Every structure is written in structure tokens, then in C-alpha cells.
Length: 341
Image (cartoon, rainbow, N blue to C red):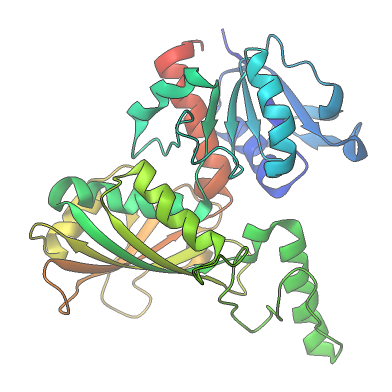
């Protein structure tokens, strides 16, 4: 016996990936409904590599009663309207937006990191999926924190344009093409030209000079991993289509060497260690795209602080940073609570 699953926002980058991953991982689905706005009603999408074709339904008049789980990828504004409706109808919402992440009654879950926290979902019948850049970082930090207790993290991100949706990907493509033929490369989605450039600005600026994306990394890491960890972040948009990269400096309470860290990471769930000290002996977004793993490279001691390490972390932001993590949450919820399939 399988589950009745809803994917809301199935026409967007993350929503489509959710549908594909459900099929790839052979999630026990008895029935699947794919939802979007009225503009997309009636259009069709494929269910992974199967021959099954799914017809988009209008979320505005969808009845969530009798459905087990709904994977939401519709943004905060729409989620604010439809998530409470689904939850009240008895359908557990797994939400990819930022709306509920810091709600104390909503668990914020990365299954490799804090699976036990999912037990709190019954308070609101909603589970939050973390920010893409946070998800991959805490996967890398968790096993190291368990061994030597992290006290401080300094992270600089190199985030792909797919994190800004289809419009971001289109803008990089169009600007790159226009530059080659001598046409204008005026920005529309981003604040400055993204082609052949980097932009140290993701999301809105806050009063303290940090951006909201940087704030998310701080508060979400504390909620998922440990509220005592000090975190500071600089988030940068780079001209890469898929895959976020992060340079992470970590300080620990207890002693840990780079070799110990590599041994730990090599055995940690969800991690692929690629760390050869030679040309090309490290992971880049090209290798991570389309893959489920969080890649870790260039693990080394930080001689500027006591008990410090530096590492490079790369992951497909549409998968582990969003869709894959949501499906893993659904799998965890099924194993621990709903018990079908």
C-alpha cells in the first residue's frame, strides 16, 4: 500500500525535480496529483522516465482531503494561503519556501542531520525544508560537530542562478548569448549583469548590512544543528546554471585534524569526499549537477585559529538543496509515522 502524494508548483524548476525524484527513488505512490496556478491548468508533465503523463490541476480549487503528503514548491505568498488548507484537511505539508522555517512549531529537517526533530510535525501538520545553501552545509557540518563540537562557522557561498528560478537561468543564458553577438546585456532578474560576473547580493538587504539569504544560513543552521554555533555568511551569485559551492571555515571546541575530518566525512551519510591534492582532484558544480551527494573537497587545517579546518562543499541546489531533501523528508515521515508502502 502506497501514499497519495501532491506536488504543488509542479511546473517550476523545483517542483518538476520533486516529481522526477519521486519516480527515480521509486517512492511508494498509489496516486499523485500535480498542482500549479490556473495559468498552467491542463498542461502535462512526465512522471520521471516512466510512460506516465500527469495533468496539472488548479491549486485554487484542489481538495486536499484524503491525501497523505503535499510537497510544496510555490513560494511563500502562495504557501501562506494553501499550506494551512492542506494541513487542516489532514495532508502533511512539506514546504520548500522560507515561510515556516523559523516557526517554533514547525520542524526544519535535513534527514541526515536532525531526523528526530520530525516528530514535532503534528503541532501544525507542516514540515519545513531549509534554504538550499543551508542544507548542503549542515550535511557537511553534522558529522564533524558530533566529533569535535563546532563553535564558529565562516562561510562564503558561490550560488548558481537556478536558485533564482527559471528567470535566473534564462537571464544568464540570454546575457551570455547577447555579449557574444554584441547586443545589450542589461539585467532584469538580477541587480547587475550576471554573465561573466559575480554579484555579492542574494535576497533583500537587512538593517545590519547582511542579506536575507545570509541571515537564513545563520538562523537555520542554529535551528537544525545547534543554537550555540556562531555563524557568519557572505552569499554570492555566480554565473553557473546548477550547483551551489561553499568555502567553509570551521572552528571547533576540541582538537580535530584534517586527516581525522576526512576519515569522518568519508563515512558520513549523504557525503562524497573527493579530495586529491592534485590538479582536478576536487569537486565542482559540473560534477554535482544531477547527483544526490553533497561533495566535500580541499579539507585542510586552518593555521590561523586553534582547532580550525577549511573545506570546499558543492551540491546540486535543485536536488539536495530543495527537491531531494523534500522527498527524503517524505520518506522519513513515512518510515517514522505514516507507515505505508
